[in-house]
Length: 320
View 1 (tube, one colour):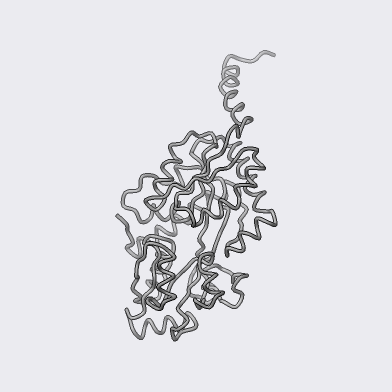
View 2 (cartoon, rainbow, N blue to C red):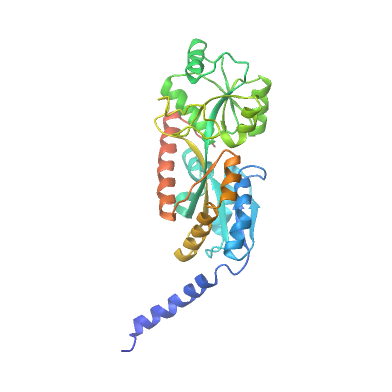
């Protein structure tokens, strides 16, 4: 039986897309990280060599910082939807920016394609070892006894650290003023020096200072205790947070990349995240690998976006 004219035209239209999918990748893959070098791009650089081996083409990490990630994300959005430009971005750029920026150029969750949420890292409440409190209950009591005396170091306005601390303060009726900094290392140095006593840091960035005795860890924001800090309770365990808060990092692609290409990228990422050497290196940084499908990743990001939007609105947190 011969093909109808409509079926023939459909096959002809599908042929270029199918050929493109079979050929993927046909050249180097550029992995845009919308932040400065020396930060969370470390995770992408750990994974890139193995991804290149699995995909058969180089995977080049390209830092494009600026505007809390908006510049790099817009560049990826404009890129051809063929899978040769992807992105590795963090929770702030992907879901918090839409909650705090008055004029966002795009909604990354809806205007980019989810590939995989790949890495998660808890946050950790730390203090200078010279302060008189050793638990979150003591920190809260001190803040209530002397409102505004105890300040916290804020590594970046509009970051996950910012929203989590402000949400905690609002829910528990605490007055702990923020001291804003331009970077995590600057904030850490002032906590170590005793200039500002409190900080909510990422475990990856703060673990070395905790292990070296320069920070005292009070609690982690994950649901469970961290294997790296088994004696430090979680905020959920203490009944102080209603849910866990973790920094997370995800691979994205331009909207319209063929599903088969997204699937191949996702499979490669998940395979790498199951390899012992990669897992060990990620865990050394205080983080953990996470294996997800594209649909699971999208659902997770939408839920995170809704939660952070609610937190930002309740706390009146907004960035021009």
